[in-house]
Image 1 (tube, rainbow, N blue to C red):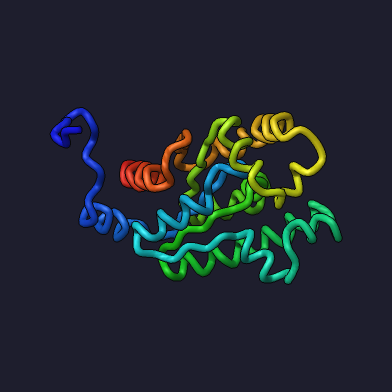
Image 2 (tube, one colour):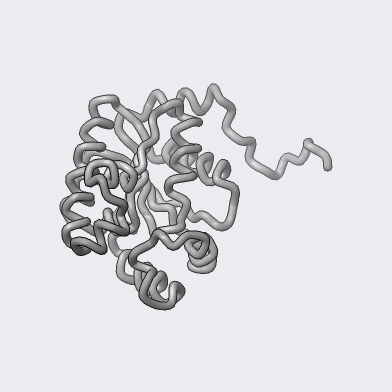
Length: 197
């Protein structure tokens, strides 16, 4: 295979990424359905930008000292969303102080009006939009998804996508993630932020 093919856009080099990173003055918040790769892409994105990564779900579990499945089991979704909203508010506040960072959020977080307003106001929201087939394949590997436990994953994910699309569409940036490597998705996000800034 020859590497002189000019048809592909040259990937950003580290100097270009560093200069984009310097222009980012607020946290980047990844939103989208479960299985869209927010955590994996988020980690990769933070690494490329030289900033911290935090997964809101992990932070919620740490604060509650319970797993998300246990929170849903012992309380209910409304209780979880309230805790989620407070944790994300704290993470964004910390990110704003630092002038950066990458935060991955659970699929429903951005649908909470208060959380969404805060993210849109103080952060850069990136919707990782992923096709249902890929989501099904990725979520099937783990049974840690309370919303998928009672029913057909395709039906549930299709319904959640339909319900949440109107919220996700409000994100400043949307990237379509086909089943591409996480590195590519992270680069796509950096390019999109560069254009948006």
